[in-house]
Image: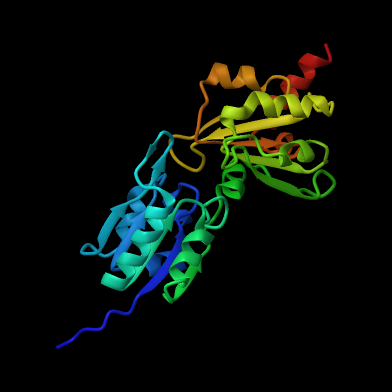
Length: 257
């Protein structure tokens, strides 16, 4: 009997690291997968939601060790959908926030394969929230920028200089290697005393946090040995956090002496 394969591709955002931040829709999508193509997830426990007999292929990228190029991943998505049917492409955070998800969807669509997207909880929002940092707050911050620290040509995004001129909260992903440039841009705007939090491996048990100001944050990073993957949060809302405000009270009392 001829069994017709019905190809389908679902992009699923795995959330920011805490496996409980995967959405119910994401859980359901994984449960129906014939194939899962997954990134270097902060927590591979999420893979337990896929059927035991599903084909699981690691296509993740780690700094300096790319398992597959983006073109190869696109082709793998299509090949597996046409061969096995239901493919889930599992990506950390949200697939459309610096995740190149739209490229993968466009490629699958060009073969006439039906595609679906399950949004994920982005680390840009979840990681600050776990530290009590509200990216917007009445009377403190009316908006926030989410910027990639490193563009495709390995440079710092020009948007950082624009964000430094605004009163918005600034969240920078993939920016640790550019921290000194980021600090310089904010100092140029006389923002040396603006609070900063750097959160490494946010929402996971390996989480590490360093807090300071634009003027002190590089020293804080060195003292606490903070490194990637980390999120940089810049703005007055950082010192409004009930978890972090003790540090700033101490810091301000030292400054006023």
